[in-house]
Image 1: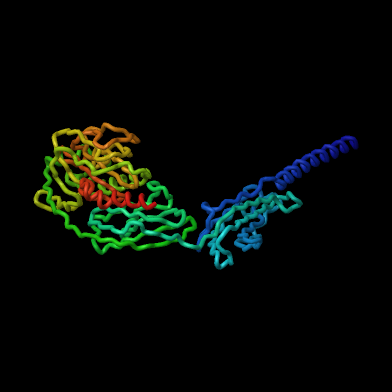
Image 2 (image 1 turned 90 degrees about the horizontal axis):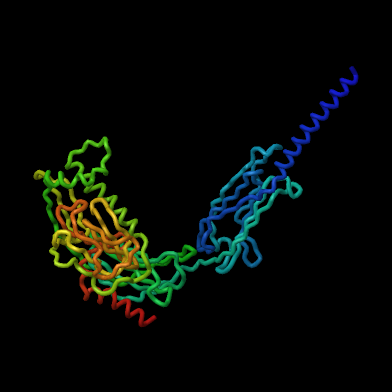
Length: 459
C-alpha cells in the first residue's frame, strides 16, 4: 500500500514538473521574443519646409510597446519631437499593452531653433519583451533630411500672353530649384508646367487655357511649390479677349430617339422604366458628365516631348456643322427639355470619310466613350491633346506613334451623333479649347513657336 502511494506521488510530482517546465518554457519563449518594433514615417522627400506635417507610426505585435523617442538632430543638438513611455503594461502572459500607436506632429524648424541645411531625424522604439535584461528589443532608424524654409524664385521668360475666352496660351518660366509642382492658375483651374524642352532643367513651359466661361476678369498667375512645401506666386502680363459664343436650337424627334437610344441600352438598369425622351436626358446629362471625367482621366498623363510642329490639319473637304462652345437648347414637341454646351467642332464630309491625325503625336486612347462613340485621343506632348469622335472605324492602337496626316480612322455616327461627321476636339489639362486657333499657322507662330525658339536662343 505504501509502495503504491509512493509511486503515485512520484508520478504526480513528475507530471506536475513536466507541466511546470512546459508552462515556464512557453512563458520564457513568449516573453523573451526577439521581434523588434517597426517604425514608419510619412516623410517621403527628406525635405522639411517652413511647416511640415509628419506622421510617425510605431508597432509591436508580439509584446507591445514600451517607449518611443523621436527628435531632430542638427549640429550635435537634439530637438525632441516625441518622448512617450506611459504605454499600457502587459500582464505576465503578455496580454494587454499597446500594440500600435500613431503620432501626428507638425515640425516648425524656426520654432525648434533649426536653421536651413542638413539635419537628422532619429527615432528609437522599444518593446516589452524580457530580452536585454528586461529592457526589451530596440529599433533605431535615422533619416537624413534637409531643412529648407525659403520658397522658390520664379523668373518669367515670356513677356506677352494674349489669350481669348475658350482659347490657349503658353508661358515659359524658370524656377530656382527643383519643384514638386509648378504651373499656371487660371481662376481655379491649374495647368502644370513641364521641363524637358530646354537644356536647362529649371526652365519649364506650361500650356494653359481659358474655359469658355472665363472672361477678362479671370485671375491668372504662376505658382511653384518646392520639395519642402514652400510656395511662391508670381503674376505675369496677359490680356484676355472676351468672346461671345453661338446659340443653337436642336429639335429632337421620336425617330431620333428610336434610332439612337438602343445604342445606350446597357447604360440603363433593368428596373428603370424610362421613356425614350427620359433616356435621352439621362444620356445627355449624366453620361455626358461621366464621359468628361473619363476624358480628364485619360489625358491626366502626358509626355514631356513636343511631338507636333506647324499648324494642325483640319478634316479635309469638310463643312462645319457645329462650333466650339455652341450653347445648345434641346426642344422636344415644342418644349425645351435641356441645355448643353458643345465642346468641340463638328465637321462633315463624305460618309465614312478617312480621318487624318491633325498633327504628330502618340495615341493615348482608342475605344468607345459614351456620347462620343468610337473615339481616338492623341497626345501631342506637354498636356496638349486632340480628340476624334463619332468614328465608324478606328485604324490605330493605343501607344502607337502617328505622323501628321496619317489616317487613323473613318468618320461615322456612333454615340449621340445624328448623322455621319467628325467631332474634333482639343484639350489642355482638363479644359476643352477651341481648335480654330490650332488650324491657324500665323497664330501658332506668334503665340507658341516664336516664344519657344526665342527662349532656346537665350538659354
